[in-house]
Image 1 (cartoon, rainbow, N blue to C red):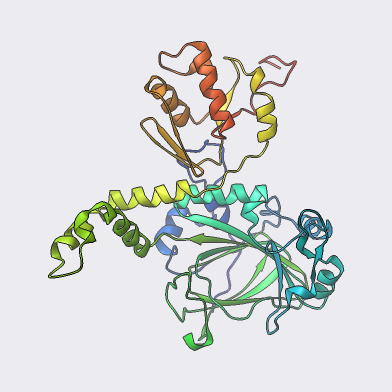
Image 2 (image 1 turned 45 degrees about the horizontal axis):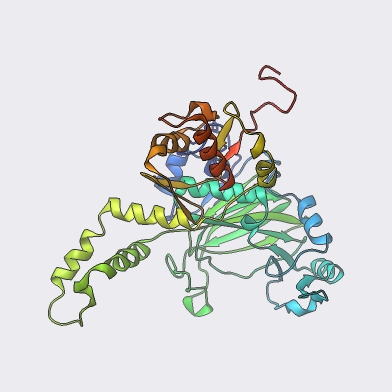
Length: 414
């Protein structure tokens, strides 16, 4: 059993690839003052990490208690964006949701605020699910973490009333960063009953109950806990309400790598025959597709092509395109993860193809980590072609008009 002491080490920052230098590292925010190098070498996918700090407001910008109350009491919460859980009990969703008549379709699964508050007062935990899909601060936090670790990330929040427990002993099938936002919560962590479980291997009592406690720790506001997938745990509040964010990382494993390599074999005629004889030659063909560079390429491809766009302010961006000039400051969106292969730019589920005449300009726009102007684009494009290109990239959500650009009526010195 371990009880952490308050962190005193010097904080560091992680340099990220393909992002602006000023962008805050999500991994650093989670594990600092433990260095990212130490975390990846000694804890990632191996053993838990408890980080205690004297920094109460460290995660308040991601989601606050006031934000949770606003989301709930607005009356707009609908399933599956939320649910109620309580250890030892099953709460029927029909008891706290309703269907609001509307045309052409009703607003089904809508929170009945009074009933939700009543369940919360009786000890139920309010779970806000999939926050990375609609809450901009956590969408950006998860996207940054995805860029740093190379795996997809997701975010839920758990608002638990005092003297209550939301979930019984269980394990997660993804790696978890638990960020304590407000209040405090006691965590009991145990060795895995099933090591590195797959997505469909949810914890069941027949896997074996928890053994000796590995960590018995109370997280306070600003503290964090990392758990590799499979580590059993349970958490309960004391005399205060608790809000914590769980950021899950869906790790790309060797099983995924083998499946992707085998899918690549679909174009190989030899794999289409009925199985007969020894498969040695086919095994070697598959092995050739499992070289480290190819595995990394497929992993990156899947990540890049499955990210949802994060387009904060995009409507305003589109409305200003007509006023865009050769001197307008532009920048790549911080939340874009992309691959550029010659004249094909892939990001956020789309692939954009360009003519050979813009190759230098596209490479410049993709590689530049700070603001630039259309006039600075290299190559042989004329001025109008430069503007056409950057307007397209803004429309597609790859570039945005820079916040560093002067507002209307101001000069560059202003």
